[in-house]
Length: 76
Image (cartoon, rainbow, N blue to C red; front, side, top):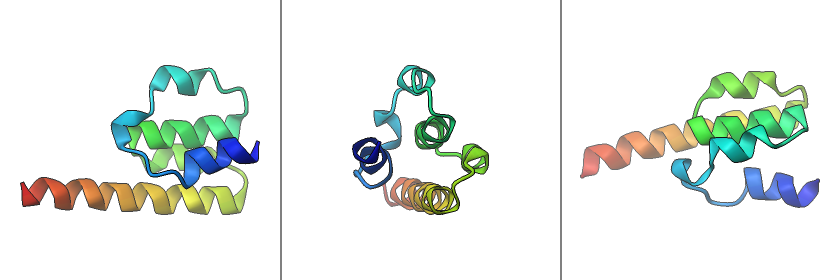
């Protein structure tokens, strides 16, 4: 479980690197929500996570990724 959480939360991933088909195969609802949040870069999926620390990590990751996408888009 911890290696999966490390890969989903802390590994530097591009928003398009997560496949939605892979997310649907995850049985754990919290890991599934985290995967969906990373795939769609949406905080709505973070709200489904019951573990507070994982939920907080999810929200911070999504906000950081959204800001990165917006600022990198404007710089091009």
